Amino acid sequence: MANIVQFENVGLRYGTGQETLSDISFTLASGAFYFLTGASGAGKTSLLRLLYLAQRPSRGIIRLFGEDAVTMPRSRLPGFRRRIGVVFQDFRLIPHLSIADNIALPLRVAGVPEADVAGPVSEMLAWVGLGDRGGARPATLSGGEQQRVAIARAVIGRPEILVADEPTGNVDPEMAERLLLLFDSLNRLGTTVLVATHDLHLLNRVSEAQMMRLDRGRLQDPTGLLRNPPARRD
Amino acid sequence: MAASTARLLDNARDGRAMSYVIAIMLFLTVLSAAMGLATRNAAGALERAIAGRLTVQLTSGAPDARAALAARLAARLRATPGVTRVAPVSRAALADLLRPWLGAEANDADLPLPAMIDVDLADTAPATLARVTAAVRGVAPAARIDAHASWMASVAGMLSFATWLGLGLVALMATATATVVVVAARAGLDAHRATIEVMHMLGATDVQIARLFQRRIARDALVGGVAGGAAALATVALIGARASGLGSELLGGAGLGAGAWLMLALLPLVFALLAMLAARIAVTRALGRIL
Ligand SMILES: Nc1ncnc2c1ncn2[C@@H]1O[C@H](COP(=O)(O)OP(=O)(O)O)[C@@H](O)[C@H]1O
Ligand SMILES: [Mg+2]
Image 1 (tube, helix red, strand yellow):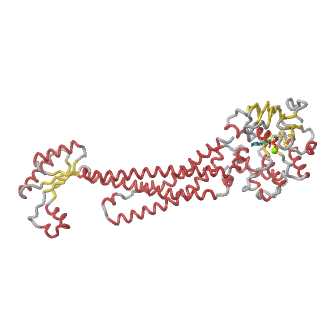
Image 2 (cartoon, chains in turn orange, green):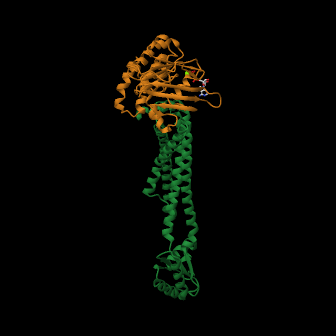
Image 3 (cartoon, rainbow over the protein chains, first blue to last red):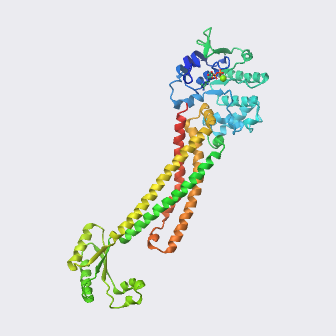
């Protein structure tokens, strides 16, 4: 499948005011790496929420994995959500669960047998450099550490798309670079990655990453590349 | 999503209030059910004892003539179809009955006592009663016939009303319990909204999320139900012990059999299941309104 995500003239209106997102049209190629930039309030989080099925658009067409995601019945959403890993801007770790249990959650939701949970969890903990913190509660971790737990939870289920909302917003530049390396390594394994950020310094850290820019709810696509993406990188 | 996710909805404090309410509900429910079952048993015992039984009294005439008439009447009754037993009440037995009121005078041979015949009928059909009445009238037109069922009917009616009242109370309690559970489930959903949202985004189905709530609510309901139910069973046993101490025939008939005790003991379990079902419906409905 060449196009894993497709938006066509998508609009989103909260309540009755102006449209927060207007005429959004783009295509994400399977296996590619994208940055979504734009000023604060431009609509980055809103666009990501449409993509990870937390919100239905007011108009337009959204196709995910080749299927119409707008008219999809509610009962099919869980199956699609399991194919998308999300790193929320505010982490959304469950405070009374241990780090390990937080990371294990997608596997347990997917019904993976309990015997097959511990292995991947400790693998993920090691991958994000928190090998010895599995038993800790989220509140005892620094912002950067919580961010890495959120990333581990987002990717443990081997999603086809990884969506991250301002993942470097709360960390120092050194940690930001480390996090980007995690995303890059994941992308090299074939996962399509979409990272929203207003941190322009990050953009040239990932070679071959494509940039999407939102300006007050409209997607800037001067070259038209977002509508007709080039072939995936190898 | 088994034991490892049981802690997903931590902060168990919101279940405590529901356990108390359900304990009280179950206490009242088991008492009501016990009352219903006991009065049903009493009504049954009473009915078996009095249905199709009547007494014929001869009060007029000289004692000798009355005795002769009574003998003829007894013979006639024995020959009447539908009559299963004819038992003339002896003068001595009547005197025994009167002794508490009359004292030694009850033994006085000159005391004018009516001649009485107890009659048991095969069934309670009006036709049988009419046939027996006609037979009595044919021999002794002045005889008085007391059908026990007729004067006991109001007592039996009272008992059956109490039975239905007990049943109605149980139904009301069940409704109230389900309502409490629905309110508690909604409060729980609000309290855990953030967790639910994350679960949804990780691809959890409504059924998976509802299971977390229904498991907890069933546990809280069971704890409360068992406590309230046990207290009520102890109370019922205590009342039963005191009632049988009275030696009353009516209260004796009200005793609970093993089946009734089992039914009462199962009520907390039934209510816990009901709570679980109510929680599941409330939660899946509420989740259906979220994307
Ligand atoms: N749930 C919501 N209800 C109403 N308005 C919202 C909601 N979420 C976002 N908005 C508004 O939509 C606009 C875009 O917000 P957002 O998508 O969060 O932008 P960004 O992530 O780029 O900062 C903002 O003006 C914000 O106030
Ligand atoms: Mg945002």
